[in-house]
Length: 332
Image (cartoon, rainbow, N blue to C red; front, side):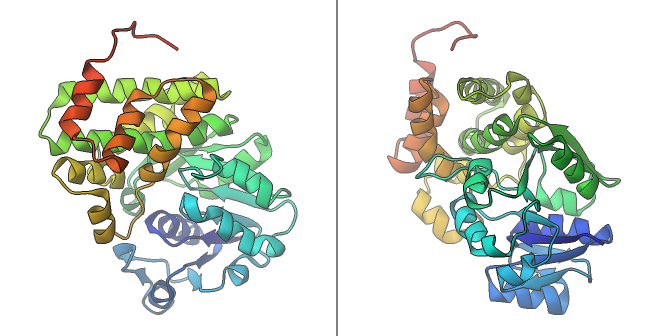
């Protein structure tokens, strides 16, 4: 029987761990919070990060990450992007060469501007890597609602293993060789989702949202292709699919942050009230530096960064976007 170690017991990590355990796999999940370990093992629940969800009784939680990964044939990393390097480095000595490493983290390191595949290549160079992305709210997956995602890897065998490992009657997994494009789509869509929340918080309608989603996708594709990604990826699940979900779905943490900003709350105030990480915050900070490096413009992402870190008025940000120099729709 394959043993899977899941690193990170947030809502997504917990949901994937439960899915795998219910498929009959031996699953160990590492949680940073002692109370999550205790509740998972004693009451088979994670009330802190996935409340009102009965977990598979066979799922075992661990406080020690090395203990969780020891002897595991598959490691699924669901740690937040800012912590992923430290979490993987802490278990590096316990990971055998050839171990399949699946990354369910949608984001990048702010200081290095590296995506999770690049972080993994530095920390666990002998592991086989695949990135998981696509439109997938954890709560809906836990409720067995039909969901489709992507497993992206330059190693076709690793992608196939990820498909077979995760796929079930309500969870379909497609493969894609474009790791970079998949990761760019998963990271940048969170920034656009913050902007979508701003529109919602201001009481705006469908016209501005449709424009935002379309031009937001153009930004993501513009940056992605400049960095060497396959343009086709951005019309698929890891691009358009995930963007639609996070800009329109009420379960989106990034969209919820945008709503709060539009209603006058500061980022600092919002952060003190919520445990869950809105990955779009770190990505918005890094997006401008990525764009400068690639020589492209990301006007929406730039305005989101100004909202978050410079106290820009939401209505002023919208006005500045609308009054930019006129351009053809297709521009580079």
